[in-house]
Amino acid sequence: MPALRSLALPIAVAASMLGLLSACPQRPTNFPDRDGVIAAQAEWCAALAKLKRAGSSWEHMNACKAAFPTASPTYLRAMTSCFSRRMEAATESSPDRSQIILECNDEVAVNINPDDPAAKAVLEARCARMQRCENVPVAACKSAFSKLEAAQRAMFTTIYNASGRYEIVDCLETASCTDNEEAGRQACYQPASDALLWFPD
Image (cartoon, rainbow, N blue to C red):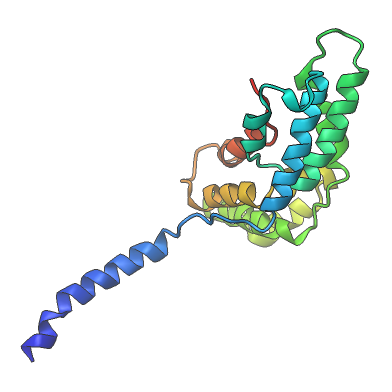
């Protein structure tokens, strides 16, 4: 049956392409908390504008609202409140923004739920990587993680929105092992960590 045999190569090629597509899934474009992040970002932008005494006419308002940070809505709203309060209360003419962010981060993280189901994928990816790269059993990894303070667990998981967590998980799962795995894991968090909050400079 030559007609059937003539389909063998196209079918094999198609199967191969399907395998490649399955191995390289496309990044999701719509995450369940997207609307919440957009709304929280708008509040952050309004707070920054207020600090500049500019209101809705702030020159960076459009760029700010167009930005999509990696912070979860809960974290972003809490940081908006803390950052605004501390900046307004600062006595110096040019308060140290970085220091205030660090202080607010400590204040906010203790009130973020680290045991939200959303944290599961990140924890699974962390522990799978530790098993793959350091031969640490998954059970031991999870046990050690559970003994961290709640704020520390949140900093690794639930301060990020679904998009941020996706990027972290993807890196933990696909990045090659390194000679310094602590730094290797941190490298997977760095881009998301750097994009938690938006500023015009």
